[in-house]
Amino acid sequence: MRITEMADRVSRTGIGKLAGASHQLHTLNTNERDNSAMAETSIEWTDATWNPVAGCTILTAGCTNCYAMRMAARLEAMGTEKYQGLTRKTGGRAKWTGKVVTDPKSLAIPATWSKPRRVFVNSMSDLFHVDVPADFIRQVWTVMEETPRHTYQILTKRPEVMASVLTRGEFPVLSNVWLGTSVEDSRVLSRLDDLRRVPASIRFVSLEPLIGSVAGANLTDINWAIVGGESGPGARDMDPRWVDEIEAMCRRSGTAFFFKQWGGRNKKATGRTLNGRTYDEMPAAI
Image (cartoon, rainbow, N blue to C red; front, top):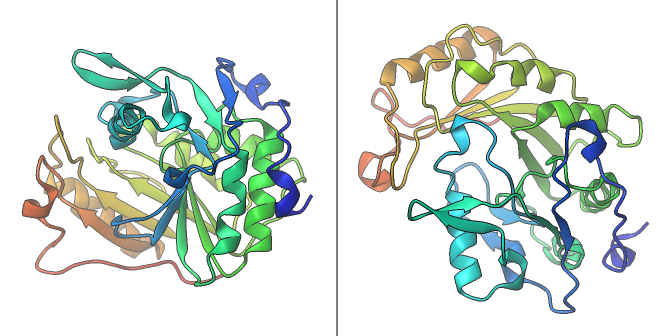
């Protein structure tokens, strides 16, 4: 199926059978393209965001202060249809409701970008959330395959789902698609093992928000590590020793090391300098 055909249909055949889906899937049917589906971004390790899916579910401790929940609540307050009902206020703060929305119209967006760019896929969701239909993931995959000038960075907290889906033989390994997982502390280090099962040209890990030591993590076959402290309201502290541990692990494993930020309530004030310098390493092309 070509990109121009994708916006007209989305299968409801889901991947939820893999891991207890909540079945709160909705498809955006408006004829107007949602401008929030793409945006230039100040995220240091990418150039733009692209959100063919919106909405998520809190999974582990790293999700507690997720910026995407706050942003989704703002977009809902602004009347953006795609974000209606994705969050609720709990204790005065926005939290995911578990509703997930697929946005077929957004699939045409990357083809309109003539300039090559790094694209963070689903900064407002998780492409491998159990309620995202496998057929919709295939359509996203086709978009990425047909726009090789862009480099797509997909980050999930559900690498076991990603591995199950992508090892079916239906998804080609694309040289312009980097696949990663988030690890916030030692309690979720098993995500790295799941990530290693995923066929990919580049595998990466986002250690943000880093809320605990990950000493002993195995970075074998992980090409890139992003490290950052939590930022925004309620941000939890990041111990500099945890960062030094990761930097040393990266040197031993040959993993590119990218230090994103110290974080805190005002991340601009704390900056992103580590031991007197910035670290902006990127993975070598494979």
